[in-house]
Amino acid sequence: MPAAITIQDVSKSFSTEGQPILAFGPADLEVEEGDFVTLLGPSGCGKSTLLLMIAGLLSCTTGKIVMNHEEVSEPRHDIGMMFQDSTLVPWRTVLGNINLQLELRNLNLDEYSVKISELMESVSLKGYEHLRPHELSGGMQQRAALCQALIHEPKTLLLDEPLGKLDAMTRENIRKDLQNLWMNEKPTVLMVTHSIEEAVQLSSKVCVITPRPGLIDKTIEVKLPWPRDLDVKRSQMFTDYMAEIQEVFQGYGVI
Image 1 (cartoon, helix red, strand yellow):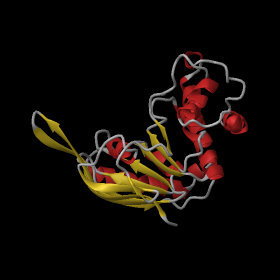
Image 2: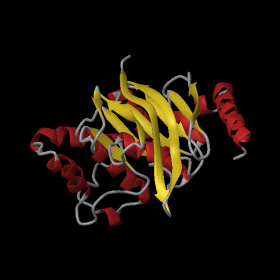
Image 3: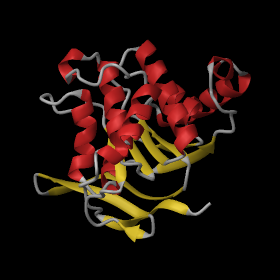
Image 4: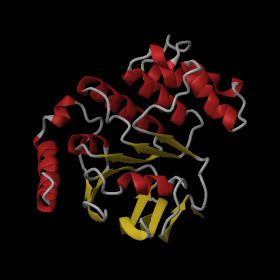
């Protein structure tokens, strides 16, 4: 498969009191079209910084990032992005927030009405279209944010710890929603997480990142069957992948 995202010698430094602080890299990575790749590392290792550089929201200090055959030099409009904190605007309904993504791109709302209905049904939001964010649970807000990120049918989806603040049961349910959406639509997904279990459950590849300054130390191909339901999570293979990654982090002294 061709590369959807190519990262070449990319690093990011910030200036603190006039002194440069290396936050990430340098690193190289290729993400193939249709892959679900997770950037897995401890807090502060620069994985979210890398995601923001891929989105064009931060510039690289060194190196370059190429997405869909174009070098990233400004914010990308052909991606879907989802953060740990909901980005829904409080004065709009669920439907209004999803429509906002289309409005900002000058797309015809009527042409997407069926897609909106299908997306909302796929994540169990049918019937909640006219509620505002404060009337929803945290999990429902993140489901709405997922619909917002996907409605314009992006080829690439960037997820920055989207389930990090949810309770365990809600997190598991949305993992299932996300897995099903990826299996059906096959976008290229790059997700940041610090959860080893989440990385193994959702990913086709896991990129293990060292403590700061983050380096992509090891890439593990996860050859578990899909869908990754409870039986798969109880399997010895799942346990072995978890143990392999835990051993890497033990070597860093972070577990």
